[in-house]
Image 1 (tube, rainbow, N blue to C red):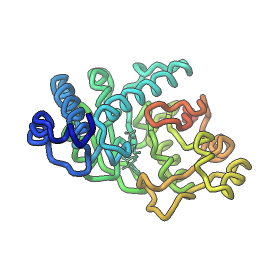
Image 2: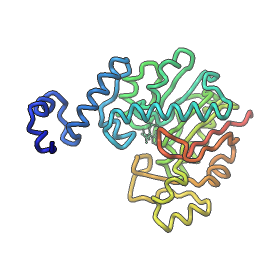
Image 3: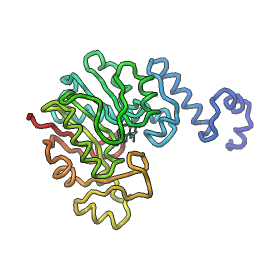
Image 4: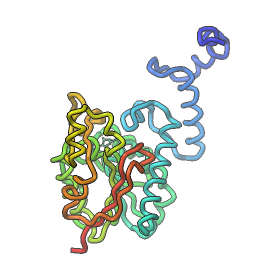
Length: 272
Ligand SMILES: C[S@@+](CC[C@H](N)C(=O)[O-])C[C@H]1O[C@@H](n2cnc3c(N)ncnc32)[C@H](O)[C@@H]1O
């Protein structure tokens, strides 16, 4: 059956009437999205509107949002486990750049033993995260530091796909701020665009990158902090410059499954 034939069938017409109107999203996707919304609502883990999903993952697919968030938690757990750092040893955890809570929503069961925080600079995403994640404390920060937390507060901060949207100066500024809010010996996990993204760079920038120099931004006219703004960090730059005041614990190339296929870094704040 062709799409044209299907679209005149009574089932199709019925679905078009029942499902929320959105000319930008195909009917089939709206149908599958609806199933995901119902399933997650039954699990008491409601989802944000697809418009917000697009802001954090680049598409309107609810199943991708659910699975991508779960894969991100798996990446975090695997990274910590491989480094012999159990998540459950932490008392205070911050999801920095939490967006609408795509990742945080999967930590609900941890909230009994861990104080969970999320922060983002986009007020719309923050409003939805606050509404959907009553088990976490959600805050809003600005494009630049400071964060609304005291010094030495967190055992663990993770920032998935946020360094990827900053210029190199802002990356350094935020790293300093993360060190301020981390406890001595606290951990920071973050992701960057690494080698996997090299072919996407214009040729002239590929050479720069291969010489260990960070690139940000190289792709089109964009505003720092937005998803369209992309920076690229060779391992040498992260290891020797971004983490110059921090102990690099582990580096996993192309290992981020929730924000595919960014490089994953785990680093530890020095004891004093
Ligand atoms: C690609 S999305 C990833 C969202 C979330 N970490 C996830 O994995 O679902 C990038 C996020 O970083 C946030 N962001 C970018 N710059 C920020 C800043 N300076 N402070 C806080 N959040 C920021 C954006 O608002 C957006 O929610």
